[in-house]
Each structure stands twice: as structure tokens, then as C-alpha cells.
Image 1: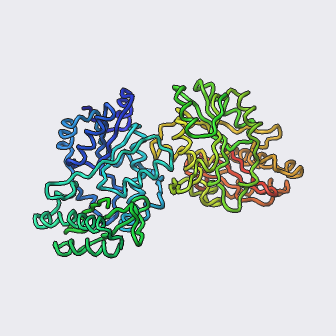
Image 2: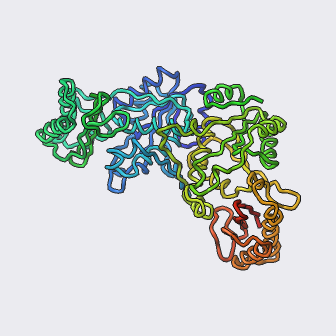
Image 3: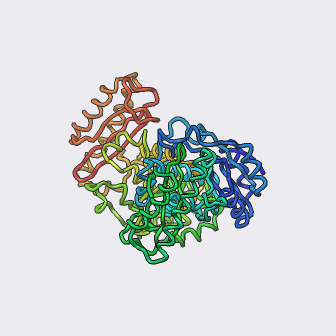
Amino acid sequence: MQVFETIGAFRAARTAYPTLGFVPTMGFLHEGHLGLVRRAKAENGAVAVSIFVNPTQFGPNEDYASYPRDPERDLALLKEAGADLAFLPTPDMLYPPGSVTRIEVGGVAEELEGQSRPGHFSGVATVVTKLFNIVQPQRAYFGQKDAQQCAVVRRFVADLDIPVEIVVCDIAREADGLARSSRNVRLTAENRQKAPALFRALQEATRLFRNGERDVDVLENAMRAVLTEAGLPDIDYATVVNADTFRREQPCSDNALALLAVRAGEVRLIDNMPL
Amino acid sequence: MQVFETIGAFRAARTAYPTLGFVPTMGFLHEGHLGLVRRAKAENGAVAVSIFVNPTQFGPNEDYASYPRDPERDLALLKEAGADLAFLPTPDMLYPPGSVTRIEVGGVAEELEGQSRPGHFSGVATVVTKLFNIVQPQRAYFGQKDAQQCAVVRRFVADLDIPVEIVVCDIAREADGLARSSRNVRLTAENRQKAPALFRALQEATRLFRNGERDVDVLENAMRAVLTEAGLPDIDYATVVNADTFRREQPCSDNALALLAVRAGEVRLIDNMPL
């Protein structure tokens, strides 16, 4: 595996690969990321992975500074997973003085996370576009855990005619159901025990939906009850939306997605499940 | 020369060309455009030209509907100039229902035209990015007549790491100095006679600058006097800016650019000259 820290060096090495899969990450890799890397390797012959904690997708009161980082461990895991190229730029390289361009996405980007985290998806869209232009992959791999991010990426890739195929992979979970996330390491022991309640709440919504329930209020209240009972009452949102538009519909459509964002101490957890 | 009306057909044909120069245009081609095509051909071996009057870069009270169009004549001229691929998409193809992504450029895009034409440069940046992603050229050619547009394109291409080299070509002028523009055909006979005053105003600013004048008020007033005396008093701006930032500096720097935007009846004329 070759490791690059500058845009120019990466671009020069990239020319050796006729087709390339790409996995953009913020590092502190877990099984979810590694599954993306292995699939990208299988489907493309060669894989590039970026590790970059992107400052422009964090709000001023969010966890940019405390986001977990361990590039040495990440590189060892990537080598083992079969990555060919690792790209670790610095914020100064991607945002040199004088940078003034942002990509703004409407529609799906304006719901839920778009309201909880103003500017977040603009930061995501801008950095992903930049990385696509540097890496120039045929396919890029994203995890369904960030369901709305996946929808936003598909949206701007289509809108800007970016020649990259977007592949979305299932959520990797711990044995107790907690969705794998780099932020899980920051949970206290107590909150780590409570955290699987997100998965249970989503399962409860799924059970009700499969029994014919289409009243969004009922589905939302059922999820809230599970979370509150488990000691996680600080709920950012617990809702059911149309999986294409991320808009709440009452009654919910058959194409429904349950979504949660919950604060557990310092950590904001998200999870989702198609109903 | 092959002519394409859909994105898919263009993309399929594009793969036959290892390197490609690109000239994005709004059609109704003149000698300025054809000079770009010939230079792109000489420097790249093959050239693609797009003809697309982009609705998103026109304001609600601007001349989108009346912008001159003549695709048959354009195609004949392009063939003669040596173009290999012509791409003529429709607005529906580039902006299908549900499109919600825009590229917003700050800094240089916020001055002059950015103030006279709100949303204009966002429309330009978005369509040029889309065309670059479809055409995937190595180099793209723009005319210096749209000096600020050239600066905006260079800015977002750098900011988004778009792998396209931007080449800016000199202004093509009529024998009497009027900058070639598709809009010139819409000038009345009377205004066509007055229009070379823009060139003369810029020449006067150049003469003063070369004699050591650095007071921007003096340079601006001299240009205004030439325009008003010629019967073109409806001046949107007549100014001298820093050629990198497009900001007015008093006194002006050595890296100065004189810029004009003047209304002659229904037609808004622009022109510029490095001092």
C-alpha cells in the first residue's frame, strides 16, 4: 500500500490504475469502513482510501477537535484490508488561503441533519467533490449508517454529472446491535451499555410497520419510548420519512425509513433502518 | 464533426479521444469563439464545443429569451474551424426535475458583475462544472472579454480541484475596436455606431495609466467622459480594479484592470483592458 500526503503525489500515483474504487473516510476506522474497502477492492481491482477529518462539515459547537484520530492504526488496518492507495491530506492542503467555493445542496439536504447541523451537508458535498476530482474513481463506497449523507451524495453527483458510481453498503453493527461508528469510542461505559437502545427502537418501529402501522406519530412515539426507557431521553430526532425525499409523510409511505439522532453524554449517535 | 444532443451519446463518443480541448459557448458564434476553437485544436489534437444558452445564469429581467440563437450556422462555423465534437444539450437535460445543487463562489465572484447580476456566477460555476464533468477535457478555453468570469472559473476550478487547465484568450475585436459579442447583433444601427466608445474609453484609461496616473477617480471619470460624450450615459460600472481580486483599490495597483459595463438600448455591453 502506498501512502500519500500531498495532492500532487497522489495524482501522479493514481495514473497507474485504469480503474479505481474509492472509500472516503474521516479515519479511526472500524469494521464498517473495512467492509467498504474490501467490497471496493473486489469490485474494482484497486482501492484508494482517504483519511481526512473535514473541518468544514463540523459546526462551531461540534466535535471537530475531539473527533478520534489514530492514523497509524488506520494505515495498518487499511493495508490488511487490501487498500492500494491511502491519501491523508491536511486541512491546509484542501482549504488553502483564498478558498471561497462551496457546493450547496437543496431538497434532501435541507431535512433532519440539515436542520440539526446547518452547513454540514454543504461541507460534505464540497469535500467529497474535491476528493472525487483528486482521486477520480470509477466507483465510491459509502455506509448506509449515514443514510441522509448517502442520499445527499447521490443527489449532487447526479445534479453535477459527476462521473462516479455511488455504492451504498449495509450498516455494520456490534453483536448487541449498536451501529459501528468512530464516535462510539468516546461513549462512557454507562452510555455504551445504553446505546444499543437505538437499534432496539428501530426494530420496534420495524415490527409495528410490518404489522401494518402507518401512523407516523405512533411509530415515532414507540421509538421514543424505547429510548427514554433505556435512559437516552436527549433525542435530537426519532422519525419516519420517505426514503427518497427524507420528508415526513403522514401516513408514511411504503418506502419508509426510520431515523434516529440521540445524544448520549458528549456523543451524538445516529442510526436508521428501512421499514 | 460529430454532433450530440444527449449526455449519454456525448459521453460514449468522448472515450475515443485520449486528450481533448473544450470550448463552452452559448452559441451565436463569432470570431472570438472561433479563435478559441482553433487554439484548442492546435493545443489538444481534438476539440469539443458546447452550445447551451444556460438559463440559470440569467436573472429574471435579463435577456435569456431574446439571446440570439442560430445552431445551424454555428455548426457550419464549428466544422470549418476544425471542431471534432459538438454538444447541444437542452435545459431539460442539464436541469431535470429535482435538481437542487448549486456551486456558490465567494471573493472575486462577489464584485462588479456579481453585484449587477445576482446569481449569475453561481449559474456559470454550476453549468461549467457540469459541462466539465460531462466533457472531461484536459484544457478549457475562455475569452478575456468576460474577464471576471475567467477569474471566477479559475477560482472554483482551483477550489474544487477540478483536473482541467483553464486557458484564457485575448479579446477579438471588430475593426473599430468593439469587442466581439453575440449580443452585438441586437444593437440598433445607432447604438452600433456609438459602441466603439467602450474601446476608446479603455484606451484613454490606458494612456493616463501609462503616463503615471494612479488615482482611480481620475481614471474612472476619464472613461465616463468618453462614454457620455459618445451618447452612452447609461453606465452600469466604469472602474479600475486589482486584476486578481476585482476589488477597487485607491490608488490602483500596478496589476490594474479597467472594466466597463454599459447599457446601449436593450443591450448590455461589457469590455475590459489590462492597464
